Image (cartoon, rainbow, N blue to C red; front, side, top):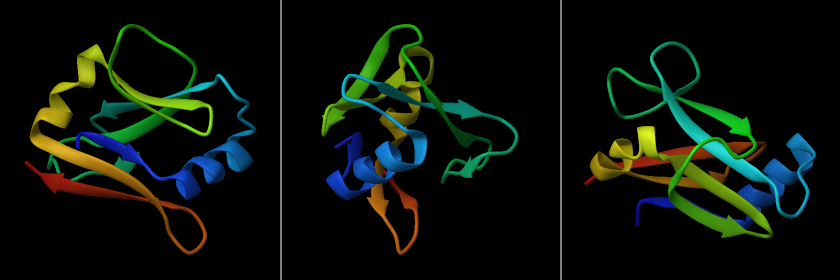
Length: 96
């Protein structure tokens, strides 16, 4: 599976971040602060825009969600699914 973003989650990003069709949302890894992942040493960050080469992507409702080349190793270890929770998106990680 790798990277999966549900349609409801994509709509949340569109509303919360003011995204328009054709925009890019990058998921990237960082050491301090951010969204907790299953990896003990890394957190998830999010930015808008295209930065570098895309390694894994999914287009949902006109928005391209992706991981860049430098962080693609994360999807070799974990599948990431972004789903809609009660009020905001939630991130589900499954070890491969």
